[in-house]
Image 1: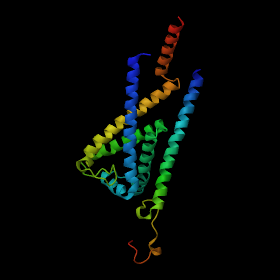
Image 2: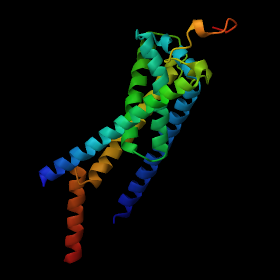
Image 3: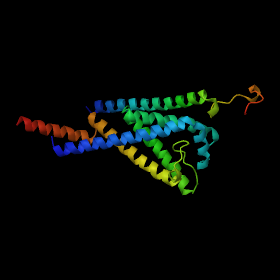
Image 4: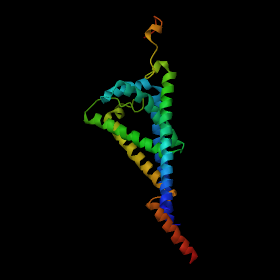
Length: 59
Length: 176
């Protein structure tokens, strides 16, 4: 009985661990996608290199 | 069933529901405002003088708002409450530690808790520390109670043992 309960607890903990990983991955994915989709507010993805920018570009 | 125990249980359930709604709303709004203006949140981070590399601060400014948004949304939707409450505890603890060091060092900064929204003196590090300490205590209470109820429902832990004893007593009373 004790072993069964321990296995149950382990299974539940493992399931929650994967939920935790899923939420963390979703946050990272959300952040990366939103960073990529808004070039004016990019913090992670590189901005276009200056050589490819028009001369009157603000940067 | 004992009516007093039933009333206390009902009150406790309502209290926890209110705590879940409050935490969910606060994290959803704070995360949403920061998601809208990540660059403004990033601009607030160096004022904490944590000595972290710029790439780390940029990653935090991009990922943390989404973590807050998803945690708050899960709490409000009453979905994966155990996972969301653990995440909210972890985030609140980090906020308390970061704001605590800012208060101890006497740093004058805009906390950036709600993105570009500014509430005057409520944005001061001391007020933000008091606010996040309350959030931390509430989230610990929610996570602990949720875990306790889940273990009880799974038949694990001392509370489940008490449940089994009570059920056996009631069965014995019914039988004889």
